[in-house]
Length: 329
View 1 (tube, rainbow, N blue to C red):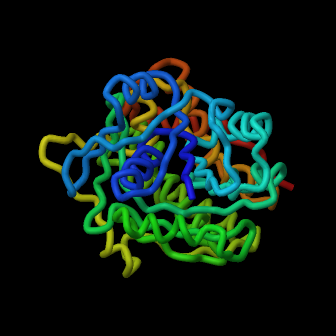
View 2 (view 1 turned 180 degrees about the vertical axis):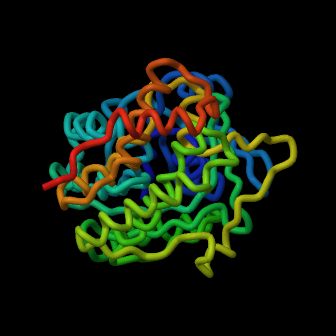
View 3 (view 1 turned 60 degrees about the horizontal axis):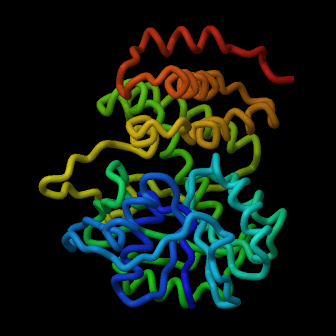
């Protein structure tokens, strides 16, 4: 088995680095400053409660540069905004039967992948990690670096990913088979609705009243759509196995949305977090005005390069009024 980590950021980088450090053959597909930094320093630096280590992760710039093997397992770890292009590049490179693991937040990646590939799996992740400095990723989870649930999409579990699950456990994660992994991913999506709240209003507001209202809209949309979830909130018993723990000398910047805005990537995943709730609301006749407003807030922040934490409650109220839609019929 070789693991191909397609997207070397906070999640993909942390997983790839720890796998490489514990004996799994890994190759990464990276871009931009991360690609340049890993090549320059001869590996990917990963910092965690286990220490700071330079992992031997070779990187290439595209799927076309990989010498694809039948026993490769592909981890999609890019943001959802980039998934469609990544899938097309895999097709162009001749990939087809290798397992595709959507190690990504949100629930939109798996159906995109299944349109083109027969062996698609979802991976739900509880894993506090960040990437702000090219060449370095930080994993804050302790004692486990992350809780990684894996299962086929849309349902099931098979032996094709057993070697990966075993390697992830050895690398410091807890990888659990989940035949209904999408229930976990829909549960995690509820948590990700708060990402843009913290990015817009600051960390103190992230889990406050705005998030409670966003989540209430989402739960109403889930009920209308018949979506069942698994609880992954902070009160879930297994969360004791992985807690976000500060690392001396490392500033915890915030959620993936804050990290994207801080790095100036030009995108956030809000359209696939809060936007997923807007989609469900429109499909099943449930009003979701707040989730819609926050998708527009994210777009404004990206386009106008607004610093994280710069907006106010009044700004949010204005967006809610501006983008209020008629009740779905």
